[in-house]
Amino acid sequence: MNRYQQTFERLKKEDKIAFIPFWMLGDPNPEASLEAVKTIAEQADILELGLPFSDPLADGPTIQAAVNRSLQAGMNTEKCLEQIMIIRADFPEKPIGLLVYLNLVLQYGINRFFTDCKKTGIDSILIPEMPVEEIKLVESAAQENQIDLVFLLSTNTPQDRRQKIYDHSGGFVYTVSKPSITGAKTDLSDDTLALVQELKSQTDLPICVGFGISTPEHIKALKKAGADGAIIGSELINIYQKEGLEALNDFALSCASST
Image 1 (tube, rainbow, N blue to C red):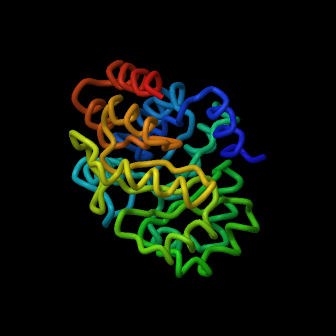
Image 2: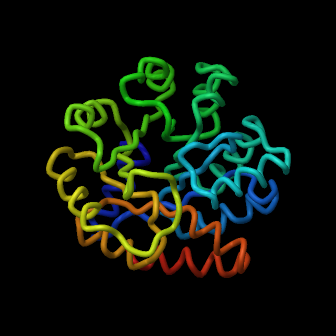
């Protein structure tokens, strides 16, 4: 079993769901970013990390600001991969997913990118603007390097596309709580919770929900609905920016305690 399978199997036995924090690599600067990632990783079941890109179409204002800080601090793909290698050394058993925009992969070179991702210990890659219909662009490189591909799925995803996502996904299905950009919100819609239950009836892949998940109460609601994981990004960044590292650790701990 790979790291994702081992993690979800363990959580199932413990009657828990995965706490999956997201962080933009290099935010607010390389040194502080590593410190923040290591802090949330202590509480995380799975890590989701982002590569900064100048035009992050799927991201709301909080993560766009994080991207800007990272780029202004001089981060690029090579430096991000170096950071992931350090994180992997500290957390050898924890699954690490990468969110990266297609332009960065193409600029780096598809085969080289996936090869270097394997060297750094990345378990999955999500390319948010790449539909599953275009998977042939990267599928062979992913398979050769034993890296799972993760795709976004929402209430608007038609059934035929859902099936393609199930057929080509590894790790988990990234379920979008709202068909829009990322960002914290106050409550989860009944549609989101119903979607989780619907997807659970269609696939054995773990169902993890992101985009707008921002409180321990959201995590509890997702668990009750049958989700396998909760992905939180914007709220972590907001708390760190406003209150610092100790508050970030406290919030991550409260999230982990709600699974």
